[in-house]
Length: 384
Image 1 (tube, helix red, strand yellow):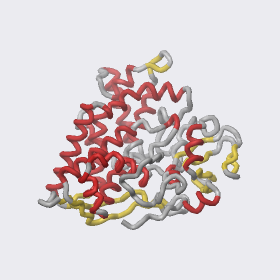
Image 2: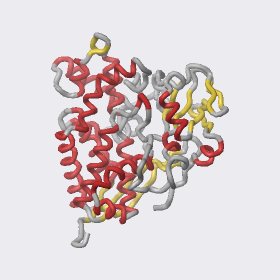
Image 3: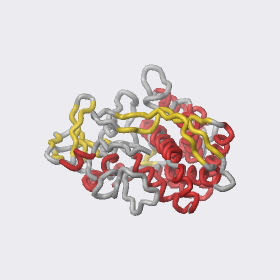
């Protein structure tokens, strides 16, 4: 696999910051690993209490609710997060692990029998959606609706004039149902939990639902498709994992580090703040650039190489600090289950066609997964 170019390397080495423009406003991007980690933990200086403005570009035009708990600061954030954390911890439970492994194993068997398979929409998207149905304890049939939204609910789905409208309409209907007959699923849980002695408002429930379905969607799809592409372009990698399946855990972490499925995330500075010589005025944003931090050569030896046995691997693909991704265990389970199924069932991954998705918003070209990726999975040979 040809080594990708790290678009942040020069600025990271020279100054540690890259001044970019998003939606007409300058946003300094913090680039170095230690600086990003420090800023992620300093919520008083770099605040997430900024509805619609934590994502970059901001999302006022695609949703109508504040996403919870990500768009709040402690102590409010901590209390909101505690409400839903037990649900996301299910990804570590044996029964949940078994069901996800069965799902992934079945999808791999189907792909083996199908011949050429388009990975992004025909494999990774169904995997992500059906695994989410397991996590949220809802019927698998619900995943058919989610698959119809596309790879990104705001940028690739249906919904008429405003992208994301389909998601909000779906959530409203689900919360209507749950209020009249609350079950043991995600929606029923949100109707029962209490925040500071009261039930959640409909707007708060919508905020949790919006983040749950919008976050961890294209990122998981990107991670799955990128891992399959790498294994197809580097046949020795799958053989390396097959020799000792215990290597799969470290391999997953390396795929997350190397692909960094989220480039960066925004923080608003409540007061004037200096970021490596760049002034961020009160109320304006800075960016925590995970993609740059995960390729910092002072932390990672030969960061542009995928090294499946890399250890230690202090990447920040899931963020850092109080806002460490709630879905990290779930994402790890999905990729780990995929690699395990490939090791057990597949002799070789053949890449037939790949159309890269490129991000160039900051004037730097960065490959962000694939618009489409067609592969053929070959069964093991007698010598494999």
